[in-house]
Length: 435
Image 1 (cartoon, rainbow, N blue to C red):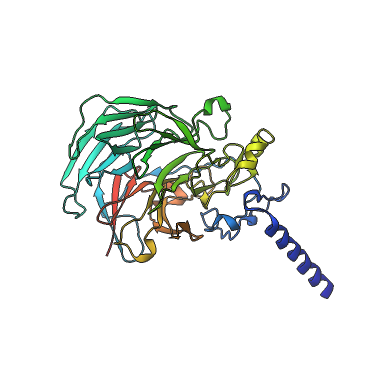
Image 2: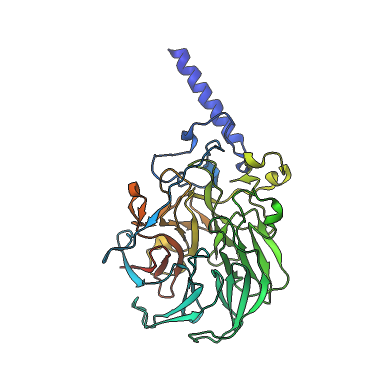
């Protein structure tokens, strides 16, 4: 018995030494190990990965036969029902009866723009403006601001222009602060590859804090490059351009679908929330939140979450696998993490200040639902503290029936310190305030 105990202790010690000696960018699971308990801290809940930073992540082995599908059916919100926030917060309806509100942009003059957009056959292709002058959560103005678009998503006000990112190109319109409608023709300053796998039609925008550059996110055309890499040119990347559309370059690549983008408070560090790939298992591959290194490569389609080679692209680009950067924080597999907003205000309790909110649209390629909520990532000294937590929940009505009330997408902070959440399948924008 003593010998057996000593042997077990020795094996465990050797195993821990082996794991410790691996570099963060090269952690893998042995090919023959199919035990899903290799996911550190797995609890059997619908979240697929322990809330932890990249230094401690252990991933299960990839399963290329995985074809799980559990798609949600939106049934709408019953009268008087809202999502649920932590104690000390209040959730109210900011706007309803929208047509798939997908993204929210707060202009420098505090006007609120909501893009109503979706897959091609369902897209309203318009932008609605709201104005809440007295910050009571009941906008005094609501008007259709711009129509005739093509699956719009990102918006930006810069240098007397209003920019709109359609799925196939970047437009800009002459704009004066306070105007409530655009009727003139826009100028197309940049062509973009259109459409994409699943919801990869979205093109987001953000300007550098000094306004000198614009960054455009473009998701992949496919799950894992199955249509050929010639279809992925200028995709799975964040592009950098001048405000007039010139000077394009790839700022960072290998980002399968980098939808949410924001600047860390008080810095010039860009962060993004990324949707990762499907059909490798219920618990692969985790979506993630990461800082974006200029010229960095984040793995898609050859590797995932560091130098873990995708077996479907095995041996094709070992050079790029070797260059793959480990993301900062996993956000759960198949959660469809879309929205990203750092909290820069002071109305929420201290723990939320300078942290990040992420809207999780929710899974489909998983046996049980994951996502369908807004999570919060605490930050200290410009870095995640190594955990995230639920913030806005209650979107799932009946998981057994695949029913949801809505699906959160974008999150945006208002100047008064409240938070807006675009619920595109609930056709609602919610407002969260601290009591």
